[in-house]
Amino acid sequence: MPDLNSSEEITSAINSLQSKLRILQETVQLTNIRDTVEDMLTTVNNLDKRVTDLRNKGYAFNKNLEDQAENYRKQWEKLYPPIEKQITAQVSVLRTAFDPLELQMRQLAQLSNNPTAARPSIRSLETSLKTMEDKVDASERTISGMYDQFYSQLNKIKTKLYKLEWMMTELAEASFQLLPTESGIMAVKAVWVKTGEEQKGDPEGILYLTDQRLLFEQKEKVATKKVLFIATEKETVQELLLEIPLSMVDGIEISKHGLMKNEDHINLKLATGAPMQTASFHIWQANQEWQALINRAKAKEFDKDRALEIDQEILDKISSAPTQCPSCGGNINQVVLRGMDSIKCEFCGFTIRL
Image (cartoon, rainbow, N blue to C red; front, side, top):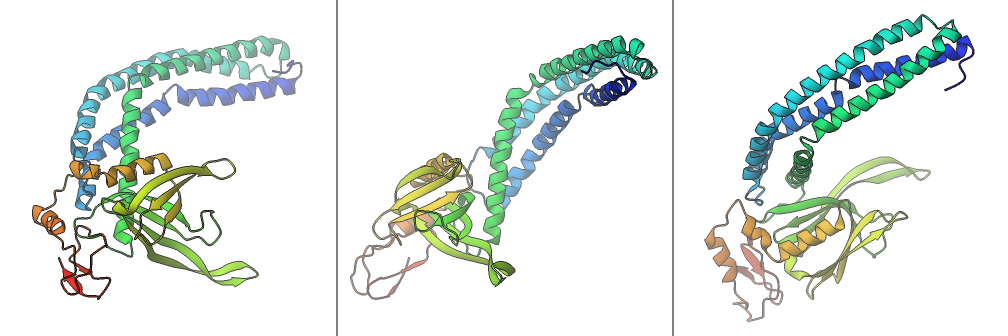
């Protein structure tokens, strides 16, 4: 704070205090707390619908998702009334403490041309405003302490649902279709790093994890015409470039790249018979999460967590698939996935109905 010897300095100080008072006038209404509580209310009220929409679009896992949504609703029904009561009580206390500050401000504004009289009033109001700010902070901590744990858990399921909704939207727009009874587990924006080192021109798109495969679909705008190295025309390229049965994933390595080591990468080691020995991706989600998801899918853990059951006849059909070609007698080495209705012999080309 300057020495406040001149009228200009007094005026500047008063304007600064007026600005702080206007901000404080909103904060004593606990606007941030109210917005957070309103956001939680909206989120909780929408959980059932969001889960139902996911099921209608074909999301098959997390069989307890409906129960989780119901549990959040019941918790919120108990939390909400005391939170609202506390907000009302705290705002009343803060408003009572705030009103005298407005009076001080009006009185101070009349002293802008009298540095001697204004100086102590400015110091006093500055102290009062700081005390008021501390009271608001204390009120916010008191109320947020009533829902912090619930808010943290609610944000987790909110983020999870967003990821699943995004995956189902992308699957609906994909250039390919999943096999019958094959279901998406997770999807992420990704770059297929073909050489192990990300380069310009590596295809960008979406990496999908299902209960049977990993699929990479290129989905990006590419330049079709350039003038002086600047793209003047572009077109969207959307094409399934890679599909890997989970049974052919022998190992998963994760690493961080980039100058700040903030780029998540996964490297898949593939078994003999796969289209390549390794497949590397730069992904826009935590690579540890994807490593865990792929391992769980390989171990068929998601099958135990199905909300949409698979007909036993379909399962029997896969388990009884032939191991030799009925035409040439050659061994069938390709992976037979649930939902396939036929396979082709790699030796004679004979189509074998399953």
